[in-house]
Structures are given as C-alpha cells and as structure tokens.
Figure 1: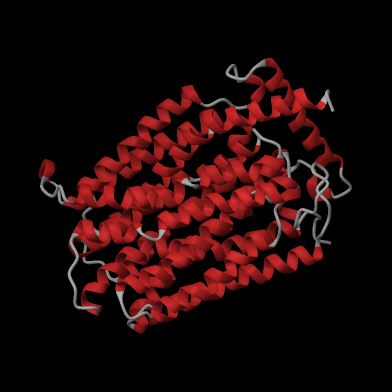
Figure 2: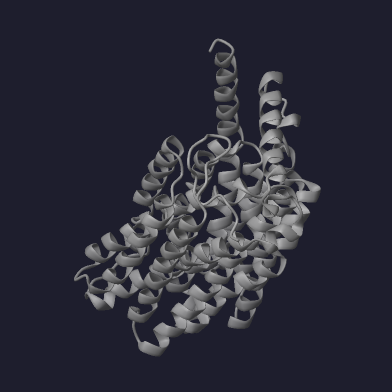
Length: 455
C-alpha cells in the first residue's frame, strides 16, 4: 500500500494540472468556435433575415450548409492533426475560421450568405474532433469523462454568455455605419484569430514535452497512456488496432455515429431555431420583447444544462460510465421536446425546452468518452472524425429540414416531433449496442459499456 501512495499522489497532481492548464484554454477555443458557428441564429431574427429577405427554409439552408463544408474536410483534417500535431493544426483552423467569420460583416445577399457559411464549415473542419482527440491523448480512459465534461461546459455556456453578448452587440446599431447584426459578426470573429495565434505558442502536443509537469508526472502520464494504447492494439479485437481502415471497418463506430446523429439533430434544431421560436412568442402570445429580452430568454435553457452536464459527468466518472448515462438523457430529451408544443405560455415552453437542453448536454461528453476506449492512433483520429461527420450531417439536416418543414406546415409541430424521434432512436441504438457488447474495462476492472466490437 505504501508503494501505491506516491503513484496515487502523482496521478492526482498530473490530472489536476492537465485540467487547469489545458482544458480551460481548449474549452475557450470551443466557446469561440461554437459562438461563431451559431452567431447566424442571433442575427436572423434581429435584422439579417429581413435585410436579406430570407424565408425559414433559406435560413435553414444557410445554417445547414456550414456542415456540408465541414464534412468535406473533416476526416482529412483530423488525420492531418494526427500527423502534424494539435498545436499547429488547431491554431491554423482557428485563424482561418476567424478570417472567414469576419467576412459575414459585409454579406449582402442570400447567395453570399450560403457561400460564406459553406466556407466557414471548410475552415472549421476538424476542430471539434481534433479537440476531443487532443484531450483524449492527455489522460487515461478512466479520467476522460471528467476531462471531456469540463471541456463540454463551453458549449452550453456559449449560449448562456454568448446570447446576451450577441444581444448587446446587436444593440450597437450604427457603429462604424453598420447594422447591429453586422456589428455582432465583426466583434465575435476577432477573438478566433487572436486565440489561434496564442494557441500556436501555448498548446503542447504530448505530455512528454510538458515542462509544467514534474518529471514524475510526465513519466506517469507517458507510461500510463502507452500501456493503455498497447492493451488496445494487442487486444484480439481487430478494430482496436491503430490503422485507418480499422475505424471504417468497425461496426461499432458506425452505430455510435448513428447515436450521435440523433443527439446533434436535437442540439442544432434548438441552437439555430430557438431564437426564432422565441421571437415568434410575440405574435403567438401577444407580447413584446426587446433584443436583450430575447437574448436572455434564449440563454435560459443553457445555464441549467451546464449545471446538469457538470454533475452528470462527475457521476459517470465516479461510478463508471454506463449505458444509461447516454440512453437515459436521450429518452428524456426525445419525450420532452414535443411537449413544448403544447405549453400555454412562453415561460412553460422555455421550461420544457430547458429539460431537453439538459438531456442533450448531459449525454454528449459521456458519449465522447466511448470511442477512445477501443481506438488508438490513426484509427482514433479517423473514428472520432467519422462519428463527428455523422453529427455534422445531422446539423445540416436539422437546420434545413426544420426550416423547410416550418415553411411547408406553417408551424414547428412536425419539426419538433422529428427531433423527438431521432433522440429516441439514439436511445434505442445505444441500448442495443450495449446489450450486444458487454465487457469489463481492462483499466478499472469495472463494466464499461459498450466495449467490445460488433461481430
């Protein structure tokens, strides 16, 4: 026991330093990334939609075409990150997307909007799966749910902080002779460029090069991660081996991609259309909101979601990740979102949407701890990118289909029922995958689901 105590102390301090030194910075990058990606949702109901004469379907297409650009280069981008290192590649991505995002300030037609949204997707391609891969390469699997949970806090907090920030910037109509929504695009783009430059000097590719770790901490992380990768590569499961074909041949990767599709469909249906739905409360309930009122209402669901995410990932870390940590929230989200259609007031509607947001954000970081449990090396880079590609397809589908169905039916009933269907499908697939593939985690000796490849 005496010999184990120093090891435990080194483990605690090493994980704490990674949590403090790397996770907040990468989370800040994600914060800016998600704000730039969803800024169009704040702009549309606050002048951009009328200035560019956009229908709901056109706005949905403009929102969604981003994901087509992302899909084109996502897997190649993550493979480049694996080859050249996260420091250079993530920094390059940030500077590129910041420049493209800045150009939205001067967009003056739907065609230009489509083009820039597509190019923004191309510029951002690989950032999210690259960040997931990067953080996964710094901590052993038993700590990943916690680390990814801290990282994922940036996404709901982007709306908690970003919606009021966007409303405040939109309120500066006339600054530099620009409409308010153009002012917003101008000022949310600059941080991406600055962070990209800082990332080039701040990030470190692997623990062995981290001078802010003690030699004992560097050795422990390096040895622990090497041993974990050796277990994956040496396992009889061919899908654990670190080659590119392994990811594309893994049935489990494809099923996890479908699970992720359902979550992201719900995530972006809310992200892109919640501000528009809230704007519609004014006619539906005969009330009036200022720009800042709408911004604060948009932020309401995401603060509880951040709190639930934090404690949910803590529970999964402490007690071991189980299928219900992912499938349970999927069921709650799938059943709650259609209920929002039948609420009789803005407060009740937002309350139900808050439940949906909590469900989505509780599940996502736990979900992302799964792929790196059985993939390593190039297979991990390709597998994570492949799963995220399914999410980007969902992002496009949720954006375009929601707008198209709204125009076709005249209401959000059918679009939100579809969100519920896809989230329930994610729950069913996760449960099926778990029932088919139960095993014990070799690192902890506890059951971690799903762990074995599909046969």
